[in-house]
Image (cartoon, rainbow, N blue to C red; front, side):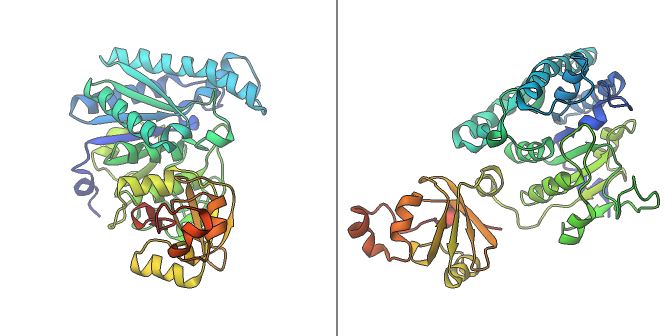
Length: 375
């Protein structure tokens, strides 16, 4: 494997920085030395012609320190308050250290709703690209102050993958508190072997990630692997490295062997289909018969109501729904043309019967193949 060759064409990079990286060893406050080091490296890369976007955790951790709390609050209102107070403290540190290097920063706070709405999705993309055109460093975080479960990304690993796809980045670097993916948990097994290259993320690879979580962050290795897996479908590689290692960002982009590199899939999804499959949240489930599944998977056809046997959930036209087979396994996702109420009336029926049943007919397809993604 020649990393230098793989990374030679990289110019636009998303860097996700976890709370475990940004905080001091005892996890009690933000680590000024780490933030200073990140600012220096990113600034050097910008001066060399790279475009760098940061997705930074740390707001809640900073808020906990500012409020003199002993731990992260358990309830949403207090957690949101900590995020609001900590976010200004976090961005202030970035602003101060980047200013020393001659760069300005821009704060962008997002919720899942901002990317699930197609117009807002494109507006977010244009805003970030415009900020980059001014040679300013965008620093993105989830808007924890207003986010609740329904509009949350879940963790910044997921958010960073969505941002990388959104702006068509060339690389995602995840700065973690471990050196990469190991064959076993290195905190439990000191002899665990680091995996330098993952060509394809299989079930075995996902199992290796285990279910470990950071003591101060939200995600563990599992969310990082899932982010890399989804992003690989966009044709974008991911590197997971030890974020506290001095000069690690420049080392990765320079092609040095560090951490774990996840190669992208050769057959990549287009931006819109990735948005459908991995940015939108499913509003319901549609069970299809084996014949319909075969036509969708093998022949790349549209889904017709005649192949639908059951509907679960309440959704409207234009929502994303999951397609499940006779064994209740999800195999596709797509934008539905009819509401759940309408589909319950026309499931199993042919298009010639729609007008008589509904009083109208919009289209023949329940999901058009252009808006359908096979998983």
